[in-house]
Image 1 (cartoon, rainbow, N blue to C red):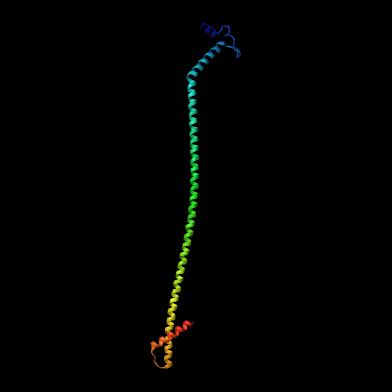
Image 2: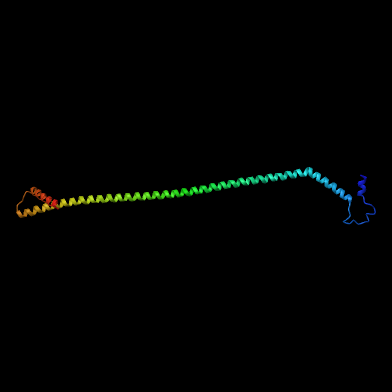
Length: 182
């Protein structure tokens, strides 16, 4: 230790001398190296493991966040694909519904047209039958009127009252033969 003390003490004549920046102070170098070595040893023993531990924890946290981000990205891509698929399915279903609706509307239209045609035909047929019946009725009335007119004319010509029933039969037979010729 006395050596150290002697190194640390400055000579009496040196105190008067101004130190220059280029002067080498061996005592200062020695203690600087000793303090630096002690500091490195303390940091190596206590600081370095804590520093390594915090760096490793940070690496693990970042790795976990990256893995979570990749999972979230994969999930988002999967959900996007499902959404696209659902959208495509909805579009195709809408197109199918539209096609079906058009088809049903066309069938309904055709059925309504067919029903309308049938009703028209039925009305025409009924009208024809009614017209035919009215025609037959009119012909029968005309025949009866013609018979009555013929009997009246014949009565006036003959000036005698003939049997009306026999005369009617005679005129009806005559009109029937005329109707069959035409």
